[in-house]
Structure formats: structure tokens, C-alpha cells
Image 1 (cartoon, rainbow, N blue to C red):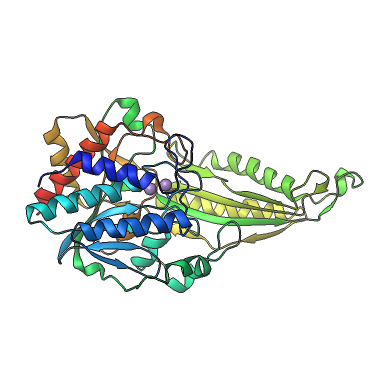
Image 2: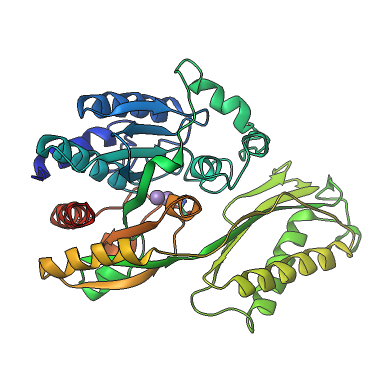
Length: 396
Ligand code: HGY
Ligand code: MN
Ligand code: MN
């Protein structure tokens, strides 16, 4: 196979134009937005030109299929509400370039996928969760984004395209190349990471309902201020986590909504996302008990506490055979590499339910991602592509 780095980089930059944010190389291409669907339609054309059979499923997951059995390579092309040009896009465009090179060389068969809503506008890696059977389409449809839009209504935009169901049994395995999105490789001046395992995640929407009232006339002692309840919850939680977590455990309240969110009204309602991640299943569950108990305890001070559905993905280990091929290919380059866990979630977590999976990382400059500043040196992008291509050849 002859990989063409210029063709790969040109395609990657072309994809960046869909939803280009105007801030450096940033993109705004959330799942099912006009920019996301336009990018998918463009990608479908590129897949067709690469000789692949283009198929969509009801979620809007987009596949370019080679004859069975094939290796599946890809990731996602949706972005965070403020995202970078490489998160997800890199894995899809690397898959496309390897599929083109494989077609030119007469094999091996390589299929390509862009999963939908990996970034969790509605859940956590929603498109691959439905495709792999981890989440039913009915349960997914009932999920809502932070503006209250349901997934069922958002995915209606897929409908003009013919949809089918793509059988996971047609694939021998799944390879996902991704930027690290953290500081480890960049700090160590290493150029490749071979993933050992992906951490688990839990995500829970919590609401405190107190009493909306006048911010001037209501004495402090008589208030049921939902914003204060949320802040007390956070302070107590950090204290209680102290003896439970490790330096690898993380937790985030990334979305907060106060009602009515205006200076002269005591907030009657606070709704927020509580997300936590860890490589250890017992610790994830221990953290959940602390979160629920702490929220209920705050509730005893005069608040109704409501928990939304718990979104959960357990930690997964990468397949030894696929990982071995990536390691052999990395070793061959002579570049510095390491085996490492992934602290970010990836579609590979869901896909591991239905076939062997492995992942390859390249460094993120300054460890920055989920931000417009996200970037990676182009020679690292190309090195990763070559290693992925070499691994595919070894597995053929
Ligand atoms: O949040 C994550 O880890 C992934 O980028 N969706
Ligand atoms: Mn990603
Ligand atoms: Mn991401």
C-alpha cells in the first residue's frame, strides 16, 4: 500500500472548512447541525470516490463499506460546541486515506466509519452506543440536549437519505486513530501512544428545586436558593471524594443552568451535569454513591432533588492482537512511543462489544483539546497515519 500524506492532509483540511469557527483551526460542528450533515454528505462522496459502498443508519452513522470481511477504521466527525479540527476527524480521514491506498493496491479490504454524536450532545458516544447495541434506539430517542431538544427530533434531518442497518459481523476488527487530548506525549516529547485501555464514565443530570423569590426582601435565613444548594453540594463532594479518588480520577460540572438566571431573583432551580471518569469500576460506583448521598443530604435543607438517567460506559481493555500490530508498526518507525491508557472516551469503547478494537494516539500540542486551540504537528499526523497503515498491512 502506498499511503499519500498530501492527499490525507488535504482531505483533513477540507473537512475543517465545515463549521470552521474563525478562531484558528477551531470548528463548531455539533451532531446533526447543518455543518455536521454537510460534512457527512461531502464525506459520503469521498467514500464513493474511494470505491466504497456508502451506507447510513437511522442514527446518521455513516459507513463506507469494502467487501466483507474487512477491517473497520474510523471515529467521528461531529465536534463539541467549541471544538478542534482533529478530535474524531483525524481517525476518519486516516481511515479514508488507508481505504484509498488499499483500493489502489488491490487490498486488503478496509471500510471507513464516521459515528454520530460521539461528543455527546445527547448522551455519551451516542451513535456508536446505538450501533453496537449498548443503547436502544428508543432509549436514545428520548435523550435531550441541554436546550431540551430530543434526539428523535434532531435525527429527523437524516431522513432524506436512505438508511439501512449495518451488520457488525462483516468486520474483523476496529482501529481508531485519535489525538491524545492530554499532555502526556507532548510533555515527554514522544510521538506515538498505543492505548492499553479506555477509562469508564458516568454522567448524571441533577436538579435542585428551591423557592424562586425576591433578592432584596427575602432574609438570608429564609431563602431556599438553588444556586447556593448546588455550590454547597460541590464543596461537600470535593471533601468526601478526597479519601476515595486517585490522581487519575476526574469529575466535572460542565453544564450549569440556573432559573431564571437573573441578578435580582433568588434562583428557584439549579440543573447541572455531574460527570465522573475512572479506570476502576468499583471506584466509579463508590463515587456514584457519594454523589447521590451528598445531593440527597443537601436536599434535606429544603430542596427537591431530581436525578436524570445515569449514562454509563465501563472501562474497556484493547485487543492484544490489534494492539500488537500497532506496537510492531510503532517500533519499526524508530520514533519514541509508549503504551498508555485513554482518559478520553472513544467510539472504540462501544465497538468493543461487537469486535476486537485498538487505538493509536498522536500528541496534542500543549495537551489542549475540546477547545479551538487544539492542534498537532503535521509530521506527527503523518507518522500516525503511516503506523496505522503499516498495522493494517501486518493484519492482512
Ligand atoms: O468526552 C470525551 O471523552 C469524548 O471526547 N467525547
Ligand atoms: Mn473524539
Ligand atoms: Mn471529543
